[in-house]
Amino acid sequence: MAYIGLDIGGTKILGALLDDEGAILDKEKTASLAEEGFDTFLSQVHHVIDTLFERTSEPIAGIGVGVPGMVDQQGVVVFTPNLPMKKFDLTSHLKERYHTNVQLGNDVNLGTYGEYKELKIQHKNVIGFFPGTGLGGGIIINGRLYIGKGLAGELGHIVVNKNGVPCSCGNEGCLESYASKKGIIAYLQSQLDHGRDTVLRDAVETGVIKSSKLKKAVDQGDVLAVEAIEQFKEYLGMGVGMIMNIFNPDLILIGGGIIDAFGEEMLIDIKKHAKHHAMKGIYKRTEIRQSRLGDDAVIYGAFHLVRD
Amino acid sequence: MAYIGLDIGGTKILGALLDDEGAILDKEKTASLAEEGFDTFLSQVHHVIDTLFERTSEPIAGIGVGVPGMVDQQGVVVFTPNLPMKKFDLTSHLKERYHTNVQLGNDVNLGTYGEYKELKIQHKNVIGFFPGTGLGGGIIINGRLYIGKGLAGELGHIVVNKNGVPCSCGNEGCLESYASKKGIIAYLQSQLDHGRDTVLRDAVETGVIKSSKLKKAVDQGDVLAVEAIEQFKEYLGMGVGMIMNIFNPDLILIGGGIIDAFGEEMLIDIKKHAKHHAMKGIYKRTEIRQSRLGDDAVIYGAFHLVRD
Image 1 (tube, rainbow over the protein chains, first blue to last red):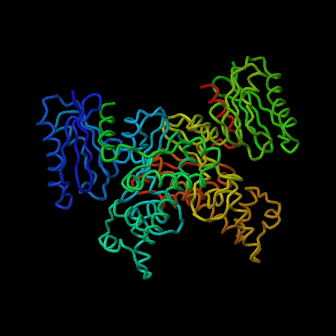
Image 2: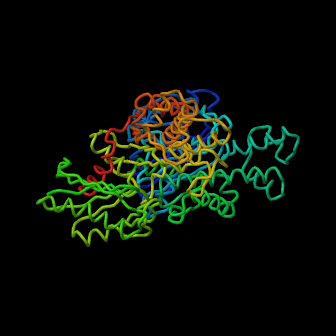
Image 3: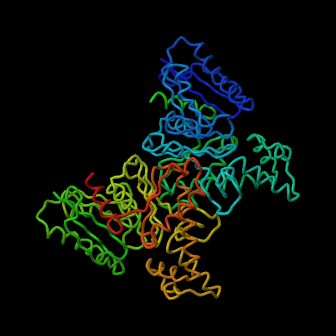
């Protein structure tokens, strides 16, 4: 008996075949081709699953899928900013095509759940922060993924500056507008507009900065890059402190490309800012830890979702 | 078989005897006398419980207690800003004195739980906002009171203005600094300092404003009172919207003296602001309702906590 875990992203689709214990037996990866529209994108999804089916003789007990967007309780994709799906019942579609159990979830929710399950953490209540292009979150309550009516965990969309900068969600001053690559690019752009300069100028102009490039710029002492990262840490730490006041959780997991590139040193600063913004009795009871699974977190979360 | 529900407040202690079904059989109320120190305060607590014991022949199956402060998972009162208790194990103390089951909780958490249980709400995930002098919150997840490591639900201490006004918790720009009587008084004081005037001047100087007085001032068209209430609604609505993005709950309950004084009209404005700050797919799936139990909410929550 085996399971398929799928991580559907804006640019690539990553699939894995896992045994009942969660060991990865096979992997397949392809481009999402989101820009070519719904039909092409969907055939890419089929391609990954078909390939994993073809290369195994094991019966498939279920397919777990992480999607970068809003998924409701029925497994319908309500909205994905970077993929050509809107109100699409991907769950039913895959069930009919593959005749197996299918479970869908938000990718960051599943990433948090994957980290939680694979690290065999003894904690009950865990919150995950995953800053990337935007800022996603995941909530584990009593050892189970919490999604509320399906869309919970939008930790990037808590307001930290009333009347602050407009956010893509329609709100203003959202945490995501500061504690994400989007926020870093916006800061650098604003400083370029003021006539200052940075080694990241070209990247800012394309709108895409790799985490490794950001780390290199900071290591070189690029003043704007250092300032942008300081702002990032300050806001992310504040978000962590606020979430502690709301959830008083056992553990906060922080992951994603930027965190992985900067490592422990960045975590120390984030903790310092979290401490400033959390209530005293709460801060000292909560552990803050860097996530470890990297690119495989969503795959594992999807696997555990469908297996359990 | 009967239960005792206790609502220990900064100025008064309210106790009730309830039967197994939650019908209130008897009530007793006394002053907290917090200003006279720990021993006097504790004897006031005893007085209320002793009186309820003496006036019934029913065996007492348990005592539930709501406390205006931080209570940890073991039922120890970690901190209460307005009562002379610090790191006091009130649970063990009452167990030893009354030889019965005792359960302690934060008063606003229990108020939310009481509302939830007594309204026989079919929802699973409910968040309560109770603005009073400060701003407290309560969280119900999967039909159960959620307290994390004991101190969850500090919804007044989420930052809505980074580098905003200092809060009593040590942080800056907390929601409580705007969406509470403390916030209303601070606004009025700041305007008085600028040479403006209000019918609430005397009340502002004492630092205490009754909700009914606030309502009267607004009805009279007092400009500063109207502005202060507008700010209150705007921030509370924003807090509600943010909490929706985090929890995607079934229901948001809003209660407390100000809400009760202003009623449905105020709720309409709070909903408007919440809608602006919540993500679209989330707002339309969440009900917002005024709480109904008023002063008895904590009593009921304490009863349900100890009975269940």
